[in-house]
Image (cartoon, rainbow, N blue to C red):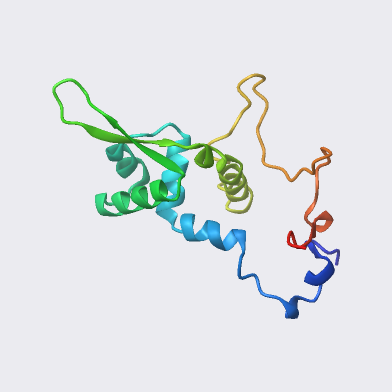
Length: 161
């Protein structure tokens, strides 16, 4: 069977000799590791900004929404901004920060994985398209030289030398 995993190089090649204590995936999951956090971020990318709309669109309790929104603001993915409608008290909306926007490729990759591996008989519920040309959008691994990269073509090296 052909290898479909990344290659560990240099000091990382002997997996029994090191641990992933300072792992970026672990750090990301500490921030986004709940279903509700990921779905709130999905909604923020769909343009949702108001607390009540997050509760309704994600299908979570107000307590869970409040906790997740606080965590996502503290992590720097959302910014809490005041707004006031005429005759109403001041409320807050939640807007994507640059770090929150940077999560979009990961959300697209998760959506794409779900479409492929959790397929519905009727096909995917949503599709993504490039606004300028209407072609489908997909998440891909691409090297800095522009080559599309397969899993077995990735080498993992220590960034600390």
